[in-house]
Image (cartoon, rainbow, N blue to C red):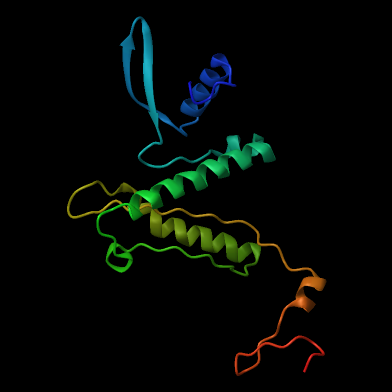
Length: 169
């Protein structure tokens, strides 16, 4: 509360209740202090996802907040990883990349179904037996196509790797 002095307590409690109800956060501890209940919240161990109804009714501003929280949690996890005494991207299986896939709607549907088929059975794995928890985060969104003006400003590559602009040989 001290970190959010501009937010009325009732508003904050209402938002927390909504986040708990939708499964985006969960109560991990609670105790009585002078007649009041103090709760500790955290992201669920299985991660946080929005159901179809929540996604359908969310405004663009809601999505901006959700995505900011998502990216913030990734930054936090990555910072924790980098703070380890020893990090080895190859040995740890760590990495990150950004790709653009050119897909028809049918190819996208097949890709999503195939990915779910691969990941689905792994979600049931329990800790132990040499399993290391690994965070997989995905973002899939349309990539903007360059406008005609942007495309003509791009520098084409020659076979030798040097770039030239149109009409500047």
